[in-house]
Every structure is written in C-alpha cells, then in structure tokens.
Image (cartoon, rainbow, N blue to C red; front, side, top):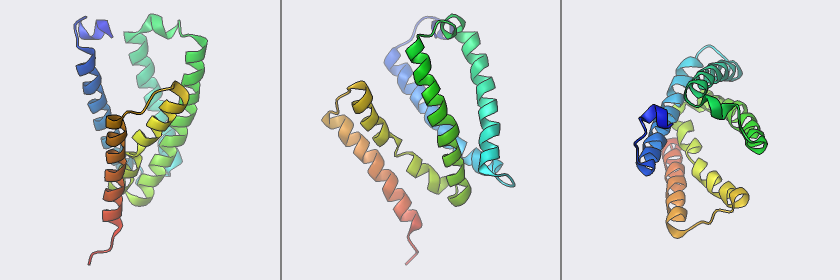
Length: 157
C-alpha cells in the first residue's frame, strides 16, 4: 500500500476514503446488477461477476502486494477461504436475486443492514466491545434502512 500511495498518508483519513469508495462501489453495483440481469438469471450474473472480480483482484493484489500474497499465514488463508464462500458466491447470489425480484432501490436498503451483522459477529469472533456511540450508530443505520423499505412498500393513501 505504501508503494501505491507514495509512502505518506493518514491511516484514519485513508480508511474513511476507502470505506466511502467501497460504499459507492456497492451502491452502484446494485444498479449495474439490475441492468445486467435483464434477460439473464441471477446465478449467471453472479458467475460472470465473480470471474471478472477474481481477475481484477488477482491483478491488483499481485501488482501492489506481490510478496504478501505468497506469504499469507495459514489461518488468514482459512478465514479468506470462508469469506470467499460466504460473501462472494452466496451473498452476491442472494443480492442479485433480490435486485432481480424487487429492484435496486428496494434491495439496497435491506443490504445496508450489514453493520448490524458486522457488529454482532465482531463481538462474537473478535472480542470487540460495543460502546454507546457504535451501538447508536449501528441502530440508526439499521432503523433508517428499515424505514426506507417500509415507506417504499406502503400503498399510496
């Protein structure tokens, strides 16, 4: 990462910037998936996106962090294998199926409840502690997502 950024960066600012860029990517992904799924089944779209994602990620990883790729600790590899099964094929297939059934604008808010699951799993697996601000922020995100979906599914009065 140092090579990519020239050696000088503020990790906190960089983390926020990367998180926002990821949010843009995930948010636009639902729209692009909806466009791509016209005339195709979600499983086919998932397979295509996984192949393209793998190729892009492999190229980036090997060009930016070549030495780290070949010296991964065994447990890190195990956890990333689990991630590769749970997140990408399964979650993406469920995401694309949801987008295909109800559209990007209805599907995306429910997917944005992910912070709730992240918080619970971080407490269970990583021993992280929930403080008041993180708890309130997580609850606000989840509640906001639910309110958006409820509002969109209500019949006009």
